[in-house]
Image 1: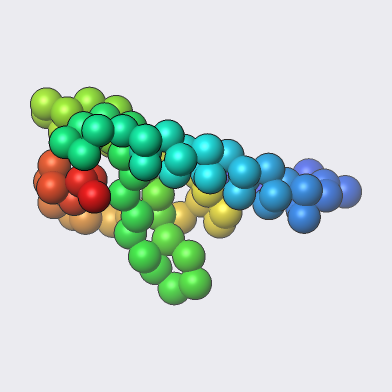
Image 2: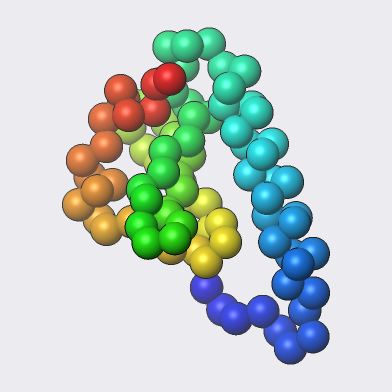
Length: 88
């Protein structure tokens, strides 16, 4: 991810990202318990992590969410995801 342009209000940018993530989390929480499309998965790393949303159930397909420092999980972690990893 490219660095923010000089003069960017980083606090405002972080607040916007946090609000967007809360919306995704709220939408995921409102899904039926067996629905995986729209659910989130996180791969913890250091002081943050990588975040993905399930966009297709079969075959299981995820999309990366460039949140905070925009960390991406190792490919092996993504390949190892199962449907169960997205269920509450």
